[in-house]
Length: 161
Image (cartoon, rainbow, N blue to C red; front, side, top):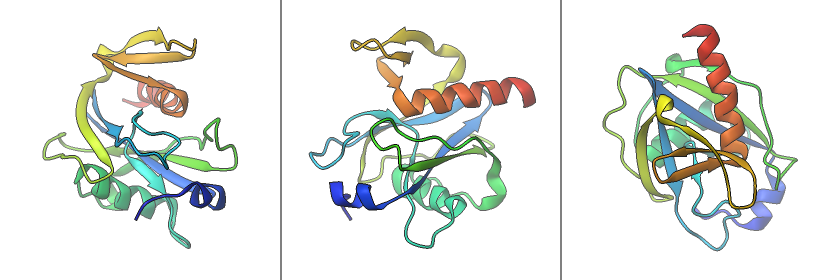
C-alpha cells in the first residue's frame, strides 16, 4: 500500500530498526517515488505504525517488509530516544536496537531499492552539499533523522557493548 502525503499528515508514530551484529548494521536505500518525501534516501528499515499497533510491533513488521529479516520482540535489545524528522515534526519515530547473531539473509522488499550491511567503524564524518552533518558509508550518505539516530546508537553502543 502506497503512502500518500495525506497519510503522512495523519500518522504520528513510526519505528525503525537498528539491526546490529558485531560492529555492523543494515541500511536501506528507499525506492524513488513521487509521493515519498524521503524518496531515494539512505535510511534504517522502518515505517509508520498501523492504527492501534505498538511501536515494537511496527518495527518487527517493517523490518520483515523492507529487508526480509524475521525477528521477534525478544531480539529487541533497547529502545533509544524517540525523534522526529525535520520535515514532519509531529511524527514520533521510535528507534529500536535489534541485536542479531549475524547479518545474513537480507534482501530488498518492494519499497526498498537496495540493502547493505555496513561496518559502523567504516563511517566517515562529512557534510551534505547543503551543509548538513552526515556520515559516508562508501558511496551512501546518511543524514537527517537517520544520522541523528545513528549518533544516538553510537553513544549507546560505546556505553554498553
